[in-house]
Amino acid sequence: DAGVTQSPTHLIKTRGQQVTLRCSPKSGHDTVSWYQQALGQGPQFIFQYYEEEERQRGNFPDRFSGHQFPNYSSELNVNALLLGDSALYLCASRLRAGNTIYFGEGSWLTVV
Amino acid sequence: DAKTTQPNSMESNEEEPVHLPCNHSTISGTDYIHWYRQLPSQGPEYVIHGLTSNVNNRMASLAIAEDRKSSTLILHRATLRDAAVYYCILRDEAPGTYKYIFGTGTRLKVLA
Image 1: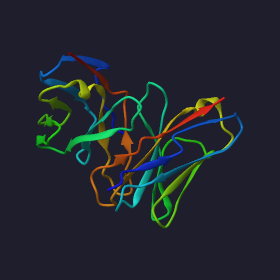
Image 2: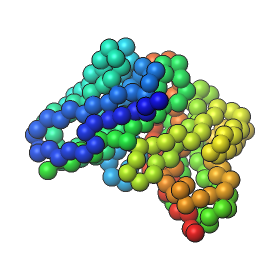
Image 3: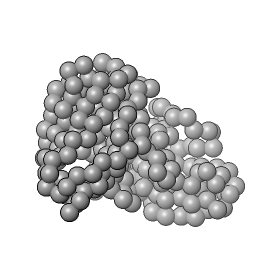
């Protein structure tokens, strides 16, 4: 049973560029959420997707957008990258009626 | 949003019990208490969760105060592999919401 998988694991981008991160949820899970974790901090909720729609959003600017596909996989897009966007980006999935979310290993983004 | 307060760091000797405290004085009646831990360079890992009653699983025990304003994660015999950042999280069960609010967690150091 595959867990939550994310790609790429590491990437480096330049300020002003755009990045797309990908996530495949745990088998059988239909709800995906994204978190940003800056160095030394706890993860911060970005948004959650269910039935291909954004259902809830944290305090992040519109530069952060996402998408969920019919197979429940998801993408996180960040436009006009800033140095402060450098962080570990975590994807988490759960069953719609479930109590527990499961995290992937994350994608390390460095903006230079 | 409800928030949690945890000590920044704790130390324990190997094979001794560890009690990790968490205060959540603004908890609402529908908030579940979740604990996750994060090992270096990994995504958060589910440990345990509860609502009102104490809970046990193969990893740990969760003791919840009667007024629910605090809880304690208990590792019965700490091992070196338990060295991690432990997060106490409240999950809002209100309809349409499903986000975890992470604090900075407690960094547990296990001494051999």
